[in-house]
Length: 450
Image (cartoon, rainbow, N blue to C red; front, top):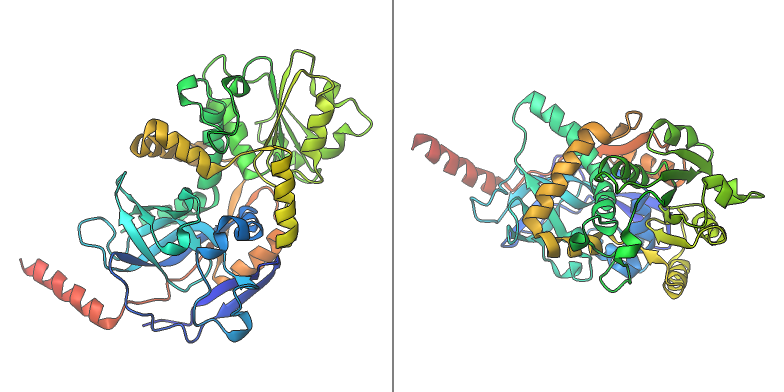
């Protein structure tokens, strides 16, 4: 039984700016839930430019396949060649379960991970607690092409009191917005630029050619972080400043970005200086950033505009014997599938080193094991969430799918400031079939009498 009609976001696969919020009046009732499955409603989600990456590269990396168009989709959006759904990081609530009792995922359980944008429940076929408590992996066939981090979910018991619910909402907002971005930064700092050689991992995959010499950071090292006001860059700058042992910190960390967010980046106190993308115009950029022949320069592109990171890296080779260029994000451009494929092919041909968060995590858990890794990472994330997030960066809450649509539009138009984090609360519109409710209620009454 539903309280209202579910609505989903549908995008053109050729242009993520072509967005539609589509009501599904014929979606309910849903079919019975399969064995070993959870039915989950998205209740909190975030929007960042990562969502545009999922849309642009979805045809290459399987992101369009995660949540297929439902059978109840109106005919004008039913062609899966033209339209599809991508996902967002956030929280959902379990509204139905066929998982055996005692595994911690009863109805009401909170679930964190890669969830659909919309109020239509999603069914997940799951394997629970195979390698670490409090987590499950989704094993549906449509996820076979997906990188591992996109089918792993964390789950938590629900808050009980009003105060707990308010605190939970705030922490879940930051988790949705920032946790996966912080994870990228955390792994880069600790494992890609490892100070312990036994923990060294490659930025994407083990055969990427990354060496212990590449990983070394010390007094001779200058790092330039492009798109410096972005959330992943800020988290990495924080880790460089606060998350390295004595003697393993760089000489300088310089932010590079646009004029508009420059004051915000400077105000974080995470950078020694913040320059504009065009600071290399008619200047010796080596002198500008303090490079000499013995300097080790690491250029990290978190999503620079106009190829600025590549341009600076080439110019800095005239001043330094060691210049490394590492890509993390890409410029926010609504390219077609054909153009996106061509750009990726050029990057591969040029052998541009690219960070892959899922690839890093797979290597790290191979070293530490799932249990140790998640204990240590989630502990560091909690510290950053409570003390490290820039004070001026605030959660901007929306409510309902109309606000999600407006937020998506503001994001692709470049109207979101560096001090804003877009998060949205969605109502759980779904109630399980009445006979399931009665069955559970009868069971609870029996327990009460016992």
